[in-house]
Image 1 (cartoon, helix red, strand yellow):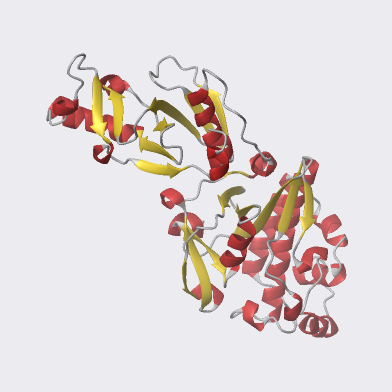
Image 2 (image 1 turned 135 degrees about the vertical axis):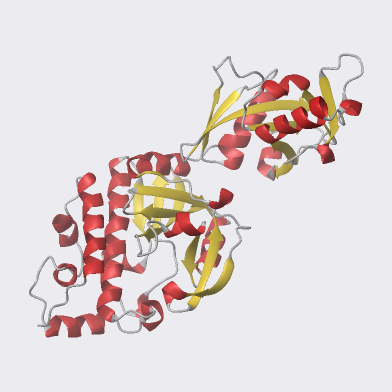
Length: 387
C-alpha cells in the first residue's frame, strides 16, 4: 500500500490524544468499543496494516456522503469524522463520571461509519440530570495556518446547512446548546440556542462553498474556559430550576435571584460581601465562570429611573430595575457607562441638573429614554405567574 500519512491530520490527532490523556482516557481502549474499530484504527494510523481492501470497504461504508465531504476525499472525510467522535466521547466520559446520563442521539452513536442516507440531523447528545434534559450539539476547532482559533479570530461559529433550524425546533421544548471545543487550547464555550437565535446563511469556503449559518458571539468573542470545568458547566446547565413564590419582605431579592437563575439560566446568585462596593447587592456567576457585580432597585413606574448620585463612586457591572406594575419587563444598564454619564452630564456639563431631586439633590430622576445603554429584558409568562 502507498503511504497514507498526512502531517496536518497527524497534528490534529496528536492534539486530540493529548486532550484524552489529560483526562485519563486511553485512545486504544476507547476505539476498541467502536462498531468499526479495526478500520478506525487503520484510518488513524494506530494500525499501519491498511490495505486496498480496507479502502474499498471504506468507500462502500461512506457511500452517499458527497454533500458532507465538501472538497475532501473519502479518507480525509473519514478521519475528521473519527476525530469528532473522539472529542464527543471525551465529553461523554467526563459527563458520566459526574453523574450525568448521556444518550447518543446521532445515528453514528455506535461509532459506525454510515452511508449518507442513514445520517440524521438531531443534536449529537442528550444529557439527563434528575429528570432534566439538555440537547447538545458538539463542534470542534483546530488551529489553521493563519490563526490559532477561528472562533476568536472571527467572532462567530458555523453550523452546517440548516442545523440551526433543527436546534431551534428542539429549543422550543427543551434546553439546547452548542458546545464548542477548542482542542489545542483545551478550552470550551457554551452557546444557548433559543427560538429567536439568529444567524446569517451563506457559502462557506471551509465547506467547499456549501451553505453554512454564521452565528456571532455576544460581545464579539467566545467566553472560553478550561476543559477541566466542562462537567460542572454541563451539570449547571442541565439542572432544571423552578420558579418559587416570592417571600414577603424580600420580593425584589427573589425577583432578581430568579431572573438570573431561572429566567436567564445557567447562573448562580450570591449576596455581595465586598463592602468597598456601595449599592452592589449581588454577585452573579455564569456557566462560563464569569463573575458580575449587580445593583438592583424596585420602582413603581419604569418610565423613569431614579439613580442615587453617589453611583459615581460605583464599579458594578450591571444595574437592574423592576416594577410590579410592569411585570412583563425588567430594565438594565451598563454600570460603567452610567457612571461615566453621571460624571460627564451632571458633574462636568451640568445638563442633568434639571433631573436632580429638588429637595435632597442626591437623586437623579431620569426619564428612561435618557438613560444611556438602557435595555429592556422580557419576563417569561411562567415567571410572571409567580409575581
